[in-house]
Amino acid sequence: MSKSVYLRAFCEQDASEINKWRNNPKVMSLTCGRFRYVGLDMEKVWVHDKIMNNITEEYFAICLMDGSDKIIGYQCIRNIDPVNRSAHAAGIVISPEYQDGTYMLDASLLLLEYAFIHIGLNRLTGSCLRQHSDSRAMMEMLGFSLEGIERESLYKEHCYMDVCRYSILYRDYTEILRNNGYTLKAIAKRAATIRKQLKKNSI
Amino acid sequence: MEIKDFIYKFAEIFDDTDVATLAPDTKFRELNEWSSLSALGVIALADEEFGVELNGTEMRGANTIQSLFDLITSK
Image (cartoon, rainbow over all chains, first blue to last red; front, side, top):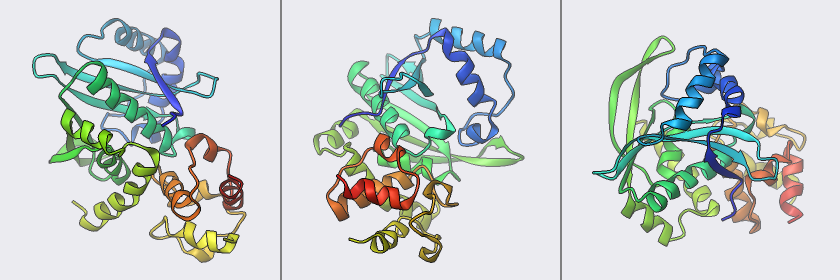
């Protein structure tokens, strides 16, 4: 399936764009991260640190494939454990104007490919806010299984929030791949069903 | 399929959006219920009802339900 985006490592120039998203409470409200104002100087240091320290965590810029190479978001895998061949997929952030789901989906599929095919992981974990049903549906559409719910583990926006913990194994990924389950068509078909199930069950 | 039938199908993507509030010139991204999964609903609709494969980049060019309908039927 042709992708709308590609991933690349961070470069120093990404700091200004990333800084806009991190200072946008609406963008950050969708993540498990805490919102706080970050100055551009601190952002530059943060981006530089991510560029230079990529042993246990790797950050990726999500860029448009339309020839503009515009950065529209970022994501990462962290806690990369070479012994147990596992890692945690965290912090996907997409610019508000590109939040229609398809760009996030393409970026997530590229991350799965990177994790399981390129660096040979066996297990990838992920988490999202329990109340954010679209994120939960996205995780399940990608083949992640719910492992549990951490009750009130996050204090955000003046309330304690539950966090859903998910995982996907290499064998889950390859089975879906083998059954052509990662085509946009196949995922789109699963989307409505999963979202309705989540809404009905409200778990 | 005509635009009025398409609007009925389009409304099925949502849980709480009344079809009576939708018209060809409705800017679908401004709907309260439009979310990051709605675009996938449109992609599934295009495939199931029209046998057409849409992608995110193509959808980005459409702003109203009419332009979405035109995009799908032109493929």
